[in-house]
Length: 243
Image 1 (cartoon, rainbow, N blue to C red):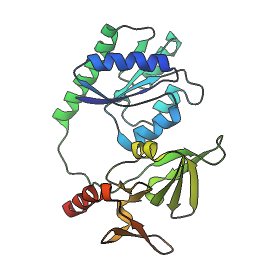
Image 2 (cartoon, helix red, strand yellow):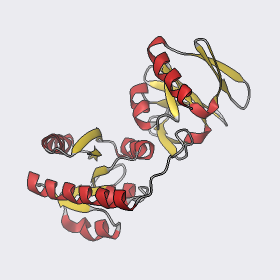
Image 3 (cartoon, rainbow, N blue to C red):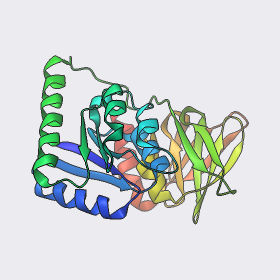
């Protein structure tokens, strides 16, 4: 089973691909968006197996986005113009589908992805990765909606939800970004970041103590106590007991 995502600035094309994915027995749709910035952040946080990526998008083109994806063989470009063919294969992507396309062409691209995953599994030595160490960054919209803020994941101590905004306590400063907690959970890697309350997500590496219904987070300035919500307590305690 391949976990896949769709990034396309036209909702109609997303709906079409969603229908094809539902028909296919080897795919699980994790995420879809018309915003390439959101898509880029999701890829960095979750590393999906397969990415259906539109090329012609105003804010960030698919070719530009592909440059920040390490494994290009996870990308299937989708576009209405064949003028990007050379650029697509120069990027080394898995496949290139010209719109409009039917289920047969879609299935052919998926089979390539399944074959590629099988080869990777056969040639990869199994290791046990660290579940908490994290690197990378997020691009978030600040209070000025036209401005994107770059935030390093390893600099985050904890995040507090404030309606449609989130406050980030980081090593250098306090930042306010326009993003909901639901969307933020999709972008942040788990269990490096854990939601422990309806209003708080914490960095696992910043935890220094758990006392009753509170977690102590050590920042560069002081220790901060954050409540553990009842609905998140069992999952959080199970995680720390495994370490």
